[in-house]
Length: 398
Image 1 (cartoon, rainbow, N blue to C red):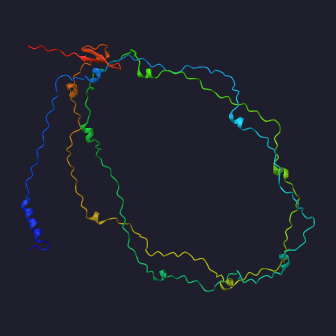
Image 2 (cartoon, rainbow, N blue to C red):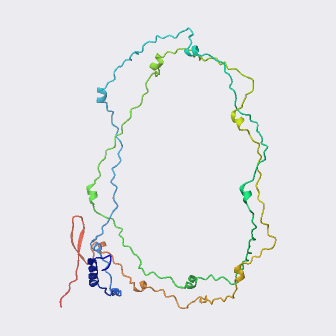
Image 3 (tube, rainbow, N blue to C red):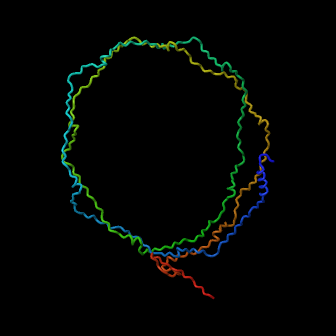
């Protein structure tokens, strides 16, 4: 028993192996296309349109435009419309103003009463406050500045080795000439030949200069109608009113100006005293934090530990010391010689189109004739189209 699979799965695997056996796959042969053989004989270029169409003489369509007519002056209409008859102007009288008369008169005696602020406010003497600002005099320290750092104390200078400098090589150009001939220039050298001749037949267009004579459905259905001239309404002339315009309003007529004096501000007199003694600007901050005298720290320049090289630098590397130069053998060139091939034979410019093309005669459409040859007239339909029947040649029996 195989671990991980049941009996049913093993049985299915055995049945699948016994039923499905591999077969040899044979590649299907591809069909070989037949060689094209052009049909012999002339091509019939006739169509049903060329067979059934009949040409007609066409004339330019005349412009159906009504004749211009001058406007006829008519008399003035003296009528009264319903609006003027129903809505008439009424005589409206001016409405009297119902504004009450002003009975207030400003007093002439000066107002002498005092306010609550003036009664309760008592001016007091302002005393200057004691200044606790420290003096701005800087206090210098007598202790010298200790500028030793951990870097200065712990740094140990080491002597460095000399650096190797390689000399610069001088460029030497090659003495061989540059070969700029490409495969395109070598293969396509240009052959002398004549231009191809056009085998297309000349195009001759068959046209008729006759005008079309006959009526159409548009001409029969749409006849010119008489159009009356448009009526122009005359505007009434503006007549300005007579007299002067009254620009007075109810506010201008009823307003009465009054003379009022400006209110005097009731502000107490300032009783500030000016003192001449100097201002004491000492504070606890100035007393507790005096300014120390400090000098600008100089630049910490590190002393040079590595001495500069005195001798000449020897730029010899391991590659140059171990490298052994060998003489180069140039590879033999397999490129053909650059020589143009010219032939004295003329250029063969014949193509399949010029060989197989056969010019054909362009036939005139039988519909351009009034009575086409080889056809018999049968009837004319309601639209004016004439129908002809082709004469079939009779074959006599032997």
